[in-house]
Length: 89
Figure 1 (cartoon, rainbow, N blue to C red):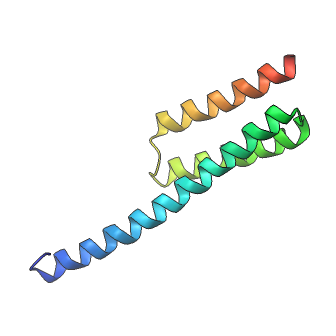
Figure 2: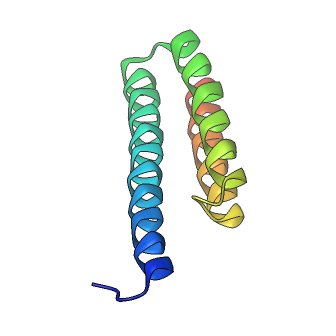
Figure 3: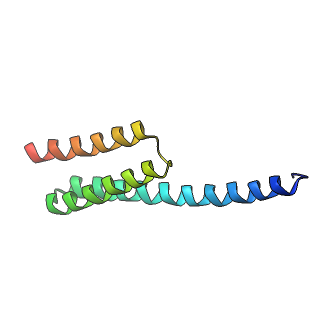
C-alpha cells in the first residue's frame, strides 16, 4: 500500500479505470459474439445491424484508448470480411 496520499489516490483511480475498461471490453466482445451468431444463423439483416453496432463500439473503444488503433482496424476488417464472405455465398 502506498505511503503518499497522491499515490493512494492514483491506486483508486487506476482501479476505477480498470473496471470501466473491463466493462467496455466485455460489452464489445458480447456485441461481436452476437454478430457472429447472427451470421451463422444466416440472418443477414440482423447481422448487418449488429455489424454496425460492433464497428461503432470498436471505434469508441479505440477513441478512448481501450484498444490500440491498429487492433481496432484489424477487428473491424475481420468482421467486415466475414460479412462480405457470407453475402457472396
